[in-house]
Length: 101
Image (cartoon, rainbow, N blue to C red):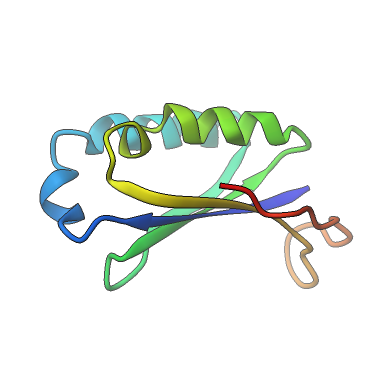
């Protein structure tokens, strides 16, 4: 199943992320290496970001968010997890779930 995780960032995100960025990226790289994160990135302008997960374990996504240094240190003001029904690309037929965050 695919999931979309949306982050909203604080206004001074670019300045505040510097000491946390490598740990944040390491968390993403580890999840990517396990096959959980398909892609991730910030929006332009950097008001937020998105991560695409592929897993049947929603709890793994919740653990990821709770362990993200950006979340732990207040750079993320709001986050949401959506089940994502993929119609074109990836594996089709995934089911949707209610958002949280």
